[in-house]
Image (cartoon, rainbow, N blue to C red; front, side):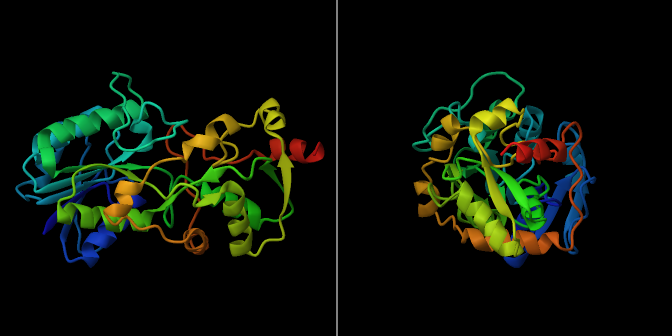
Length: 324
């Protein structure tokens, strides 16, 4: 079938393209053309999703039957897609757990939890608005996958990647003292393959698309990084109060770390529906090892415009190591 990927040249979208090609689809991507090239055999379309005329012009008569939307982050992008693609047989939208009003901190008991309905131009409210707009246009032909923490090869966000690099460097490594905090993740390849199958099979409604609650802990994930890299690193646990006092920012300076009052419930997300619909969850070690293998031949990502890559600044780490 003719399958359009909105996005398709970076991380999750790249894996969606690969999965669609493997399943025999005729694939097109629609991107701005600034994040890489589409694979051979893919129809590469370019334009700005916020421009109401761009998508229709780029399609130029090519009529997709299925759509997987990995790049929608603005209200205009969703509205423009709904106007052009309302007649497709199936549309899968990659949303976020941030679409829920109560996440974080959660917990999220199921897909019926309330989502944002405010006009704020923020990530979560924009995802929730996009779900409503696209859902109204497509009805039972619309699936929204509320993704959590996505990891795997080609990840440009450098969260797991930073930990792998830092742990591989060895020595004394600052870690939060709460290493027993739960964390859940989904491999981009698992999510991508499932999205293609889901849109083929006509799945609809909302699905919490994340790993199972309790699948690992932050400490377990970091230990896996140490094993995969063969590092001699030793942990230097620093209490949360000391990290905060030193100016360490959760999730930013120490990627994947959340304060204790959030960490206990943030990954308590019911993924029952996703499991019933076949969303797989490969072993954490496989995701970590494959990410590290990919990193061996890849440059570290450049930060997106207006953002810094995550990671603990060396000076701040040195001060913490000197006092713990």
